[in-house]
Length: 258
Image (cartoon, rainbow, N blue to C red; front, top):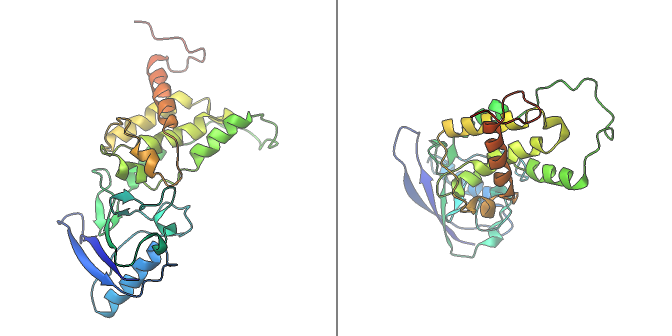
């Protein structure tokens, strides 16, 4: 296969970037997109040129590192797929392919296709955990959980924190990511104690990081490689609203006096 690549090149966050064009021959249809990028970088290195910087790690669709906007879509044209598991057979011989980094104020470009996603880490640090001591490790089946609830929690927990939801959203919102992290803990019995305070803290940190507001475009769900539902955003909104109305520490949920 012959592919014509238009790739965003940017030396650092302090300089302007531009698109460079590369002609790549001998692309095997069974290559993953990242293997194709490796092939390009080998050619650039042999020519004494600077290889394209891009994030990658496990290359198995679970680490969330491979962050590329391919032909205007986060992770590329195949739904429910990470960039590392997108194969060149999903393209045609002679195709022109545009490759860009995630576009978000909260994800500044480090170099070329690599962006700084530490904003996600700070959102997790603000409340994405269970801090109450649970005592000795219980028998796995000692806490009964309805199968439907367990399935919902597992659906939320599949979020790999790649940031495709942010890149896909016209407003650059991180609501799908935040709602998934809030949801999978808030659905389980162990996470109930901090359920509402967790939602409040993580939304506050999300706003502080400069992510945009959610307008229910649903592009986040459409381009999420794990196909996480925007129903979690509705759940987060409900928890956040309740956290604003309930007195801290009031277990009965008594509303604040007006």
